[in-house]
Amino acid sequence: MDLKNMNKVEAPKLDVSEYVGKKVKIANVSAIETQFGEAIKVETEVLDTVKRDGKEDIVLTASRIFSVSKEGEIVVGSKLDKFMEKQGVEQPLELIDTEVQVIKNDKDFLTF
Image (cartoon, rainbow, N blue to C red):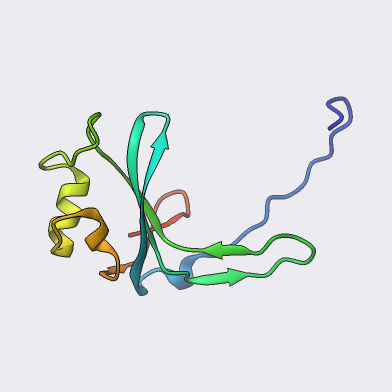
């Protein structure tokens, strides 16, 4: 990378509106590390795969990250607790195969 001679390029645009409202199943639940500590990432099945010439394909899923306590526990009344209650499950891994409806947040990311 030449910091004295850089070109400007347009970021690829992807219209995700066609996926909003679609009902899909949760495919994966995993523990992740964030800048704020441990969290749980919940991800849907693949919505679509966007092919790009000469570049890696873009795999579209909807996902959401939920915080947990410093001890790695579900906090009563937290977003994760409320989501699990809405989905009718007791433990995070039980979210797999439950159905969610895709929405779009204010940054054009797909979530639920």
